[in-house]
Amino acid sequence: MLSIHSPTNLALEKNGIYVRSEVDNFQESWPIHTHYGTEIYFFIQGDATLLIGDVIYSPSPGDMFIFNGSVLHRINPSKETPYVRSYVNFNELFIQDVLTGEMIDKLSSLFQFPNGLLVRWDPEECEQIKELFIALRDEDEKESVGFKVMMKTYLVQMLFKIYRKTKQLYSFHTVPTHSQKQSSVRRVLHFINQNYTETFSLDELSKVLHLNKYYICHSFKEATGYTVNNYLIRKRIEEAKKMLLSTDRSVLDISEKLGFNTPVYFSRAFKQYVGISPQSYRRHSELG
Image 1 (cartoon, helix red, strand yellow):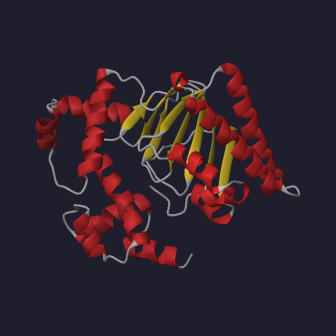
Image 2: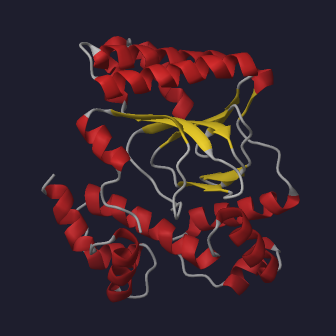
């Protein structure tokens, strides 16, 4: 189930920033989702796959992923190994008063990659990144005098470290090396993300991509944690949430636009994944 107001969205609406450092909690489920703002995700320990847009990453300790929160993403960690990560989400407005327009444009470019930006840090750099996350977390938790200014300072330091690192072309990768299976899943993801408003069967998907349908089912579920149909519905629901908040289209119009067979099926699916009806979701947003 996807909550109408995740902790991330609530924090960004209230403070413009949401930070967690070296967290190791394990959830019952890890839903695919989107959220407000931008995200810097730092992988510290574990065995996991990370879906961002059309790409499935296999992160190693020290890997950092930078992406726009509006891109569908999901972590799929193994239960067999402790999963430790740090992350910070923020709105651009949070740092606008401490940077020039030119600097904001440079830093904003880091978040324009549709499948995220991967930056790999060496051990010494990792320690510096960890210290910045800890400093951000401590300021956020203690709320001492001037804590927001301090948080902006630490966040900007981190952003400039990332920006400088990406200029060293030999040490950053926008697209990781894929196995044959991951490449096949990426093709499936790309097709769904480009054609989610259309109606297509698994047989048709198999023919278009020239892949065995049973191979598609097995590989996709193994890599993403979802069946093809379940991912398609979640993709449509995420797009529906955006349309409900940013347009005045009717529920019937949105249902037809996103390829649902009937408005009743759309409303039922929306309530199953979001927890409330499309109409309630829109009203809840309008009430703030």
